[in-house]
Length: 110
Image (cartoon, rainbow, N blue to C red; front, top):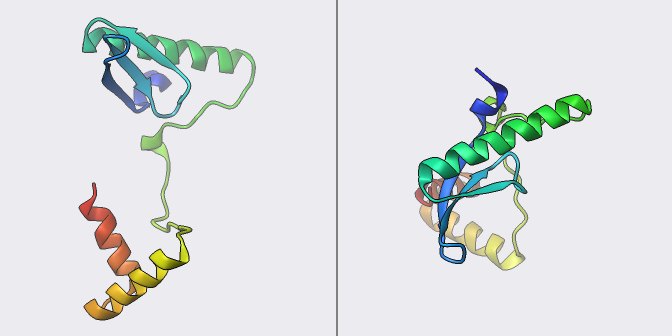
């Protein structure tokens, strides 16, 4: 398996271009237009493979695939004081910690 096979790809429709756009989350500046979703996916995979090869030749850092990264489960957020206060009030009313309430709300939005 090639390294570029493990990256996170997605295909979207572009009304502006009237074509499908292939994207890769780990290489946010790269994209490829295609007439079909399959063509856009094949194209972005080729673009990413070329980018990885170029980075290797230059001895430059290569992004690690999101699927290979280890996550701690700890997330620190900065929110406006009003949002913090509202979360604290909602958590107190519900009888749960702010952490639990925030985690539950994040899970609902997936």
